[in-house]
Image (cartoon, rainbow, N blue to C red; front, side, top):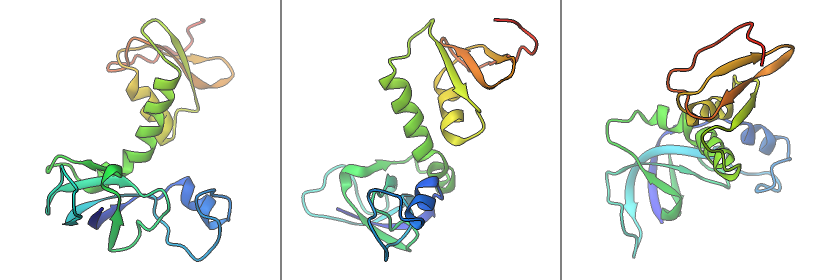
Length: 164
């Protein structure tokens, strides 16, 4: 286990679901909100390797509690962060970025595939777009989404009016 001083905590849809009683991991009140955190390790539990006091980390808390000043988390859920990374930035992309990564990985997207990202305005959608590098973004008629040919999005080109 790691005791972490919380420097930033995310606000996500999971928090809204928990407040409304619809989040499966939280069955009923009372509970503490906050499912993703970034902070500094204050204490390291026995037999924990790979972390030391002062290390910057981020984690998904899974059962809440991230809105506290400190949180005790399993070391297996912690991600060591670069010291220069702003904790607010780390926590802002943690859940959405991980979700996008898992979606692309499980879909087994490969070069040459076409990926449709619906309403690419949220964190998961933007993470999916970032996970596809050097691709082509093509608006699709009345569909309010983005179709990307796998192969990259590092230099995406918006091609309004193109028929596909």
